[in-house]
Each structure stands twice: as C-alpha cells, then as structure tokens.
Length: 214
Image (cartoon, rainbow, N blue to C red):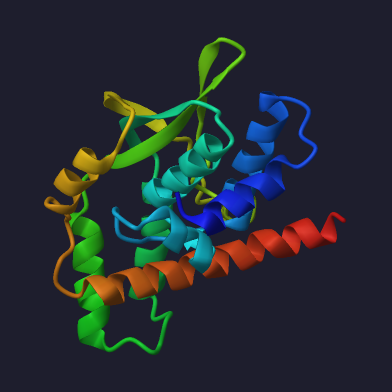
C-alpha cells in the first residue's frame, strides 16, 4: 500500500472511537474533499488523492484503500443507473445557446454529438462497507457542493438502478473490460475538459449557496 494513502488513513482514524465513526470520516473525506469529475475508469487511488478529483471509480477505489488501511472490510457493487442525464442536458443546452465561447463551431458540434451518443444508463460503482455485521452501501461519487449546485439549477435527478452487474472484492478485471468499451474515443480529452468545466461551474453555484447559509 502506498505510504501516502496509509498516512492519510491514519490521520482520518485518529482518535476514532469505532469502525462506524472511522468509516464515516473516510467516506465524508472522499465524498467532499475529493471533487467529482469526469475521468478515466482506471485511475489509481494515489493519483486520485494527489489530484483531489476523481470519477466514481477512482473515488471508490480511494475510499476502499483507505478503509482497508485501517482493517475495515469493503467490497464493490457495480450497477447501471438512470438519472445522470441532467448534467449532460445542461451542458448540451449551454453549447446550443453559444456558451463556452472558447470552443470552435466544429468542437461544439462534436461534443453535442458525443453527448447524444451516450447510452441512457451509466455504469456506476458503489462502495459496500462491512459495519456492525452487515454490508452497507455508500455512494460517494458526487461531492456535496456539486449536488447542491445541481439541485439549485434544477438539473438534479434521482439515481435509479437499471440493473446490477454484481459484487466484487477487486475491480481490476472489471475496469480493464470497461476501458475497452469507452463510448467517446476521438476528442476524449476535449470532451472531459468541457464537461469538467461545466461541473466546476455548477459546483461554484453550490458552494455559494452553502456560504450564504453559514
């Protein structure tokens, strides 16, 4: 295990009274201090920690590694979900109305086509943590500021399970297979850049709401 991750786990469990409390600290840290972004599926936990950003897979892998560093059992539930289209519809509308002026007309059209090519459901990974004799699901993908911003803008939608692929102790094999069936290949870096720019704008909206409530 990477010593940087081990050190972070020790910081998070310092003076923790129970596995429940320690797990809540780790989960809150990964949910809110590691910002959600669009990224590759196979990013290593240490890279997610260093960047401070990650997709559901990267965030779950980091949370799992932190739990295992303090001997709390975890595993992974792979599902397909509906309900993620709100953010992409928001981006599509911005592109169609001339927002993001740094993009050329060709880039704008290409990203819109990429959005339309996405399947109606999304692969998603949930962390399962063994606490008090049972496995409990934790969805830590979206940070609170992003979630708040999506609600404020009216683009938040409940995640609904389309199907469950299974429970895994390791995601190594699943992630290799997932990387082989990526939807957007050409212009992938630009697609990520634009989506993440809009995600950051939504997050700023959520953070401003949180600040006014303090």
